[in-house]
Amino acid sequence: MIELKQVNKSFEGRQVLHDINAIFLSGKNNLIIGASGGGKSVMMKCMVGLERPDSGMIEFDGRNLLALEDQDLRDVRREIGMLFQGTALFDSLTVEQNIAFPLEMFSKMNPSERRDRVNFCLKRVNLENINNKYPSEISGGMKKRVGIARAIALDIKYLFCDEPNSGLDPITSRLIDELINEITHEYGITNVINSHDMKTVFDIGDHIIFLYKGQKWWEGNREDLKHAQTEIKELDQFIKASYFE
Amino acid sequence: MISKPEKTNIFFKRISDEMHKIGIGSLPIVAITALFIGAVTTVQTAYQLVSGLISKTVIGTIVSDSTMLELGPTITCLVLSGKVGAHIASEIGNMRISEQIDALDVMGINAPAYLALPKIIAGVIMIPLLNFIAIALSIYGGYMAGELSGILTHQEFVSGARETFKGFTLVFSTIKAFTFAFIITSVSSYQGYYTSGGALGVGESSTRAVVFSSVLVLFFDYILAEILL
Picture 1: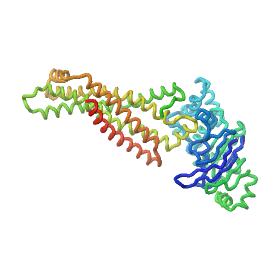
Picture 2: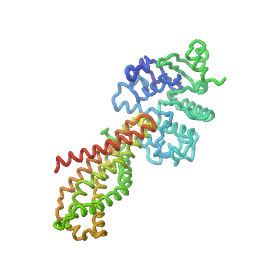
Picture 3: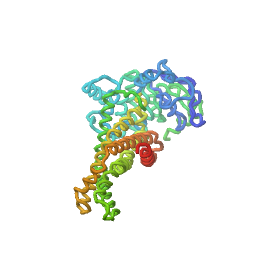
Picture 4: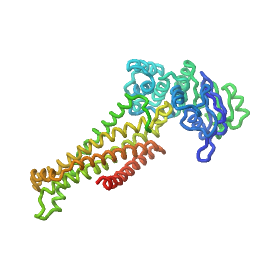
């Protein structure tokens, strides 16, 4: 479980996150939704340690990320996997080398064990026989899957997905959603997904947080969302803007 | 940036890869530049020494000394600040804008140490070696130009080159190459690491890397000459 307590963040005097309190549950798809510029990406960056909040606490199963010593912080980070919006695969490395990268850096596996683990991860994301291809030689959807395979190569506890469907066609988007959903429940991972794709929200969103202008406007599950929509104007506008009617 | 590498074997493999990229990858441009600089120096020195009172061996002396003192390390490193510096800045800059550096950070890897340190170490090993090759080829270029154009005989060139040779000249040249190598690799890595603003930003970082490292090479060229000569 990840818990945010009174997290504030500003850039050059402009407050981007206001007193955010939120809980992200283990074994669930926790979605952060909201319009662009609403603070979703900054909130995720604070959670993975790419940005440091001005104040507040971010606890990973009781360990406050902002107060940890270097070694403890590294230990927590090795429990984190992240799927970036642009996949962030290393373009100088092959698919196999990309997935093996965290294993080489942090595990004591020998080359044969590493290869087995890479093949297992590739199979898990429904990809095979692309080990020697470079990221530039595969499609956007395949890159996303390789990104997921790299994220789960180590036994992670927390998975962060930043706009996992961006740039993908609707069919591939649903496949990626299904894959993320399966992996989350199969491994009991605390999954945090940053998205403004309402189809993703209604398909796999177990726990949803709606951010509006840097503030947590609403929090609940997808069953409550329809009801909340009738009461909260900003949430209603956001959801309706996603429909093609 | 200076911190214990996560895995020593990966760190050394990265240094070896970078040594290959910087050293072998830069060899053709360094060789071509050095050969022509030596040849041009011979021809131009002969053109300026029109007096019959001055021995032609002086041409050999001027070519070899100026090559070791200035042309070898400085011109080589100015060329390398364009070739190696731009490459380092654009490679790291591209990793920055495509979130690859963020991916390293999220994994808990010290990104500057992982990306920049192997390049700096490889640079300070390989660039002084390239400097030795540049000096040898430049003197050979000068010698060949003298011989082929009939300006002076090979005995005159070799005798002039040997006449005033001092071991310290070569040491000074190596100190310069070492210092310039550190400047080129560290300035370019810094510019690449702090790239922002997309593809345009990568171009700007590469330009800044070349300009700043070239200016610093020239500045430290003067400082080292003042201090050590």
